[in-house]
Image 1 (cartoon, one colour):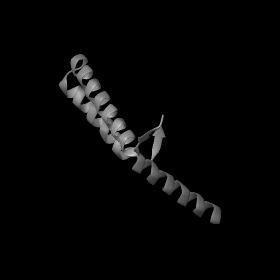
Image 2 (spheres, one colour):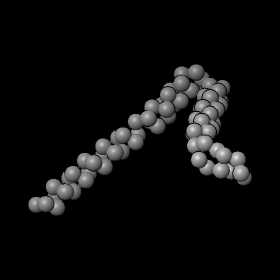
Image 3 (cartoon, one colour):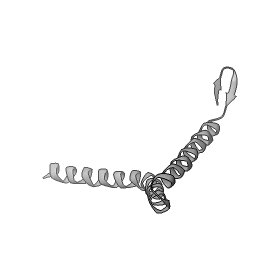
Image 4 (cartoon, helix red, strand yellow):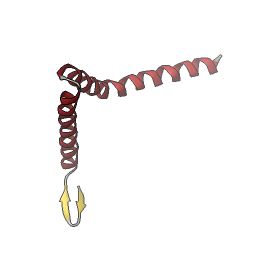
Length: 77
C-alpha cells in the first residue's frame, strides 16, 4: 500500500487510472482520425496500434531469445 499525503492509495487504483487514460486517448484519437481521414483509416490505425501494443513485447522477447541462442552457439564453437 502506498500513501499519498497521508491517504492510502492502492496499486490497483493506479492501474485503473492508466487504463482509463489510455482508453480516453484511444477514443479521442479515433474520433479525430475519423474526422480527418475517414472511418476505415481510423479503424485500421486504431486496431493496428492496439494489436501492435499487444504483440510487440512477445515478438521482441522471441527475437531476443533467438539472438541469445545464436550467440551462445557461436561462442561455444
